[in-house]
Image 1 (tube, rainbow over the protein chains, first blue to last red):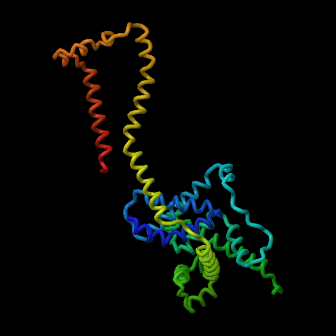
Image 2: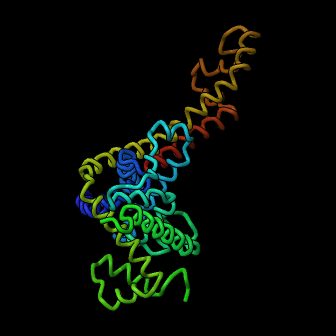
Image 3: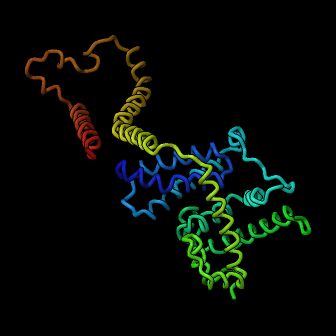
Length: 166
Length: 158
């Protein structure tokens, strides 16, 4: 890949990748570091030529692996880097904030699956390659994560807009 | 009906992604519990993604390109110097292993080439080939083989 091709690829994928990392790890600084590292590893990897969709999938796979490595680090080290803000259980004022907090209450793995499936539009095979899970188990895991998020969104909507309140 | 998924789930997600959600599919989503859930979750996540895209700023592509190029050079250098590092490590290991023997030998005998059986080399009188013992030949062969292999390893990708 030459520099101009990379710039075009970067223009298409940088924000989606950064958004994915921010939403999954919950720390913007860490997400930015991981995003840059993902591109560096992508460029220095010895892989055969891929089409755009495969390249995008491979990039997300690198980023997901980096995230996983970060989670495996000893707890003390992770804490010194600044843990993500825990989701508040107080009723939020704003509906958007409420739904965002609902998403943050999901497990990282659930957030990954939902983001890849419904924002990135990845199929089960691509999600399996990206997350290291078995392709056969994606359907059920995705269903559970989706159900949980729908419940949390429903609950947060009820708390931010209680019945009778305008 | 399967409670986990619906045959039209992927069509719905694709339509939402491309912004081509037509009335018939929307009506289906209204009656199908799986698709209504998919619709709710996908719309929420896409709103999140759009909001994030507006908020986030990414570094310059050329900066990342340069960083990756520098790292690729470092990787190539590390690969090229691997035989040198291996040889150096082997040399250190041999030196450490041979040191006790050397100390014992040197403390027992007076210093001089004769004590090592290399007296013939000092004369250089034309009959020096006679000094080539089997051990020396093996050593020289190993050295040339090492040089050849190292050269091949370093130059194979050039």
